[in-house]
Amino acid sequence: MRLEPIVAGNWKMHKTPSVGVYFVEETVNLLLDIKHVSVIFAPPFTGLIEMDVKPPFYVAAQNCHWEDHGAFTGEISVSMIRDCGSDYVILGHSERRHIFGESDEWINRKVDAVLSGALKPILCIGETLDQRESGQTQRILKTQLEQGLAGVDSIENILVAYEPVWAIGTGVTATTDQVEVAHAAVRNILRELFPGSDDVHVLYGGSVKPDNAEELIQVSGVNGFLIGGASLDVDSFTSIIRTVEKDQMRILC
Ligand code: 13P
Image 1 (tube, protein in one colour):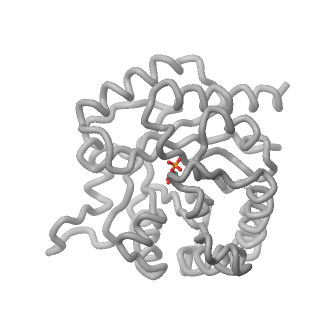
Image 2: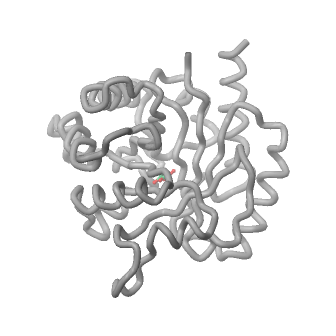
């Protein structure tokens, strides 16, 4: 049976807290009848405390530090995020890896901290264009999963997001074949690392838009989306969620 899909909107460094609250209220009001999709909003840290949503709507932070407190100027800990009422933390996003130099080892410490703090990591992985063109995609995905999840006993509370770096914010979406192959690879690696992990969600991210959501959600192994640009606009975000809901209803019927 297909997993119930999850659609997450990663706002990155967009929306002030007041704009974010208004956006979430508007979005939730338009989606009150949604039954088969969970929706996650990931505002900047400054917006977390203002978010007040109930299932099937959830809130994610976009990053955290692995220590609980201390002299780490500019950082935010898991207990601070939990105290804001958040449910998830996005970790290892390609912008954290490539702009801010986060290593798999750091990401692994954060995964551990998020799990210890009873929140759920959304672990992002994905290859660069160079790595894809030199045939390294599967090796990179394996390394990022092995190292990011090192020492993790149970993967039950973890979501994985496959986001090819070259498709993020570029308008270039991976083809359905590329997405299918990558998701199958991710699933196989997860099975090797965590036998019985087939109910772990693997989301796709990278230029998901209203006009490609329908074909992407039908790709085998895609259990939902992690969306950047199109999650900032009420119409495009709700349209993608409705597409995913419709597709899930089609499968359930
Ligand atoms: P875009 O949807 O803007 O390509 O961003 C994807 C992403 O990075 C989500 O985390």
